[in-house]
Length: 142
Image (tube, rainbow, N blue to C red; front, top):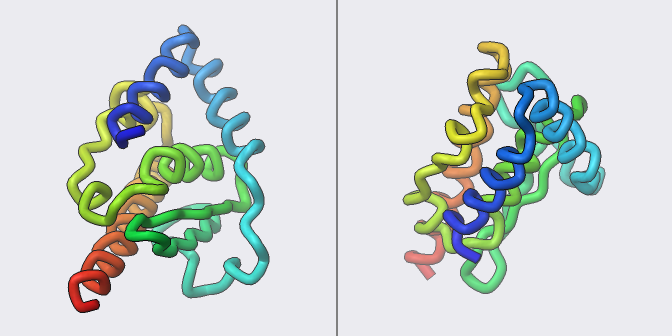
């Protein structure tokens, strides 16, 4: 599936909920279902700077694609990072760098977040893109 295919699936899922609280509850469910990150990756180097909650993001390359694993100490933030991992994990670095993440606005995610959580979302996106950029540069040097 392409990044846009995954985004469209998420938009369809969130369209099932008419009320903002239902969408919020679904986001919490996503957070609860996100697999817990292995303790060896819950290190300072993997903490996303700029998040109100603690968010750990681990990225790695396999067969030319970037994969992400993440965790957080709050379920809402874990749901947010879970969506980002779902959309961006398993794609080539350049695809991640070029991705326009329109699903965030389509599901009205940012409009239901506090300014601190919205800043955290931006920080998570930045960290994911930095991982992709770093792995893209490593691939070019190889």
